[in-house]
Length: 551
View 1 (spheres, one colour):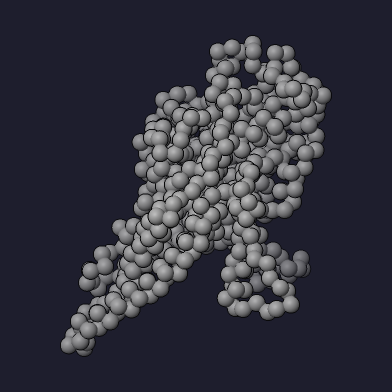
View 2: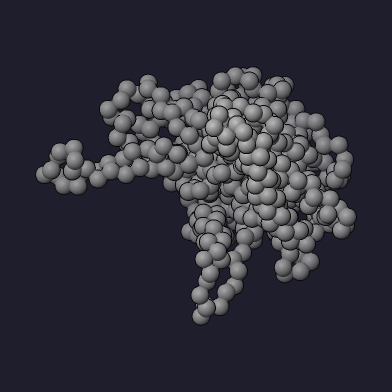
């Protein structure tokens, strides 16, 4: 019997990625507990199997995907239902440690910049507002010590991984403008910057994907390539530096999965073994929910289209969307003009919303009669209408930078929502499952009181109800401490950036003709740097205090 194929799509969402990490944490727990129960008592478990064909991700979702892939075949330990904020996190829970307990302290550190007091003529490039090495260092810190200790689970064998990136160099395409004019200058040329990098965990049969051996040490070249790709996909422009990526030209020859379009220009003229070097930035800029990549991978494997009808369904895409109910545009009287600054700030929000999700895919996932696409999104009872569902949604989805208690809430909410999804939504009516060749054998299977068949039934620890996390709250003293600590970190970072820039353009370099006034000049430049840094941090302090009103 062929397994039911699943493709997971993990959207970007800055620090709201802690919610996505919680969803994956419970999903892996449910699948692992089912596999344990099958080995222990196969006659009492559903006869069908589940296969995760691919994990397709963007931005923060790419970091979650990278960490999830690293945990396969290890002693991964999901959070227990009794786990509370402040308890020591499980040593082997890479998702919680990376997104909650160990996240953030070094993000605004200055170890990638020269000391402020340094007097030097050397030019030191400024790569990003945050620490340019943070994402890559976190990947190395979390992943390199991991070793395989268990067989790769059956539900993950042969899994593919796709990550969207913004290709800063661009991929060239061209088209003849007229059949009768075949000269080179009669071509219409364009560059495509929305790119996608894929990995396959089986023997490398697809020439457009990198190979990734799940049983190999986590410090080998294949894994480092995965870490770099995830860091590039999550590199929010300006905040983090773009990641250098090297990719064979052959990867662009047949893009039937990642980009089903014509072959780029230089593939036909260059040797396929040549390496294409480019810089990768935030994949969410152009493709924050790469559902089409997930669908293409599923359909290519089975060689047929996804079926929306439950009776003939053989697979489905599950979108894990941490962007819903997060960013709101301000209401405005359309009869009045918008100021320049307000227009700029609102346009930024509009662009985030538009890049956040694709309307057609969203409505397909919400259609109860469409069995090829599902969605897991943040949901919980609100204390009031103005309260966000995700605690990290403040500060444009960067609210999780303020405190780990905020990220802890969203991680647990992700686990809670995933359990509810598997029990109440990712199910099939009994009359449909009897007609589906994968689910038709129903002897000794778990069917709930509404005669619905769970596609992923819950066993063991996964059957215990995940508690709804309490909304994080802070006292006024704690809010002041959080605000002061965060703004001081940003102030120190900005001062280091402005000082390095001033040194690069010569304002802090020794100058022979200015030697007699060197001390006065340096004092004046440093005063200006401190003043500008203070203005920026004061503005940020207001933003932080406004965000903390939600708690």
